[in-house]
Length: 326
Image 1: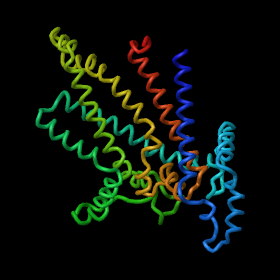
Image 2 (image 1 turned 120 degrees about the vertical axis):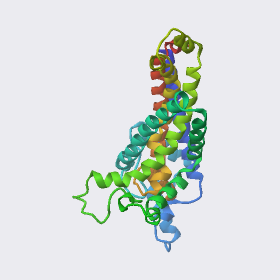
Image 3 (image 1 turned 90 degrees about the vertical axis):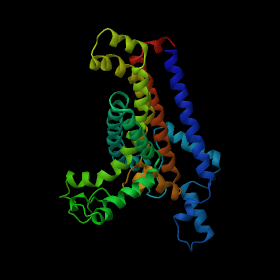
Image 4 (image 1 turned 60 degrees about the horizontal axis):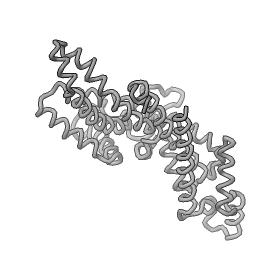
C-alpha cells in the first residue's frame, strides 16, 4: 500500500512539473496570440482589447493559478483559435492518433519480436549480421525523411519503376477528397493509412527486434537452459518454457516505455501525411500560440507516459514475484 501511494504521489508530482514548465515556456516564447487573431492593420488599442478578451492581460502567476484551478475542476479551457472547448478539440483528434499509434505499436511488437526470435534462435551468423545492419539503418532513419521517401517511392516511384498502378498509394489525407463522403469505405481509408502506418511501424519493429534479439540470446545462454537441453527436452519445449518466458520481462518493460507513443509518437507523421491527429493539432496550436490547446495536449501526453509506466510496473509484479518484496 505504501509503495502504491508513493507511486501515485510521484506521478502527480511529475504531471505538475511537466505542465508547469510547459506553461512557463510557451508563455515566455516569442509571439502573441492576440496579434495573430486580429487584422495586421489593427491598432494597438484593438490588440489590447483582444488580449483582455482572451484573459492574457493578467499577470502570468494569475493566469497560471486560473489554469490550474480549471484543471482541478476537470476543465481544460477554451481554444483561443477555434473558440471551442479544448476537451472537444482533443476528442476530435484522439481517435486518429489512437488508430495510427495502436496499429503501428501492435505491428511493431509482433514483427519485431518474431524477427528478434529468428535472429537469436534460428538464422546463421551471416544472416543475423545482415538483418542487424538493415534494422539498424531503418531504426536510425528520421521519421520525416522516411515519410518523404515512402511518399516518393509509392507515388512517382511506382510510375518510374514501371510497377502496377495498384501499388500507387495515396500520400496525403485520410480519404479521397474527390469521392462522395457517404460512399467512402474502409478500403479507401486503409489505402490512405498504409504509408503512415509503414513509417511508424518499420522503425518500431527494427528497434523491438534488436531488443528482443539481445534478450532472447541472453536467455538462451543461461545455465538452466543448457541444463534443460541436457535433460533431453526438445528445442521447442526449452524455448517455450525457459527462453521465451525469461525474455518476456524486459519486453514488457519496453512495451510500457513505448506505450505512450500510441498517442504521442506520430507528430511528424501526421504532419507529413496530413492526418488530423493529436500531433498535427499540437503543431498547429504551437504555431498559433493557442496556449490552452498546447497545455491540454501536454497534460494528455504526460498522463499517458505516467499511466503506461504504472501499468508496466503492475504487469512486472505479476510476471516476476521477486519484485513484490523489493
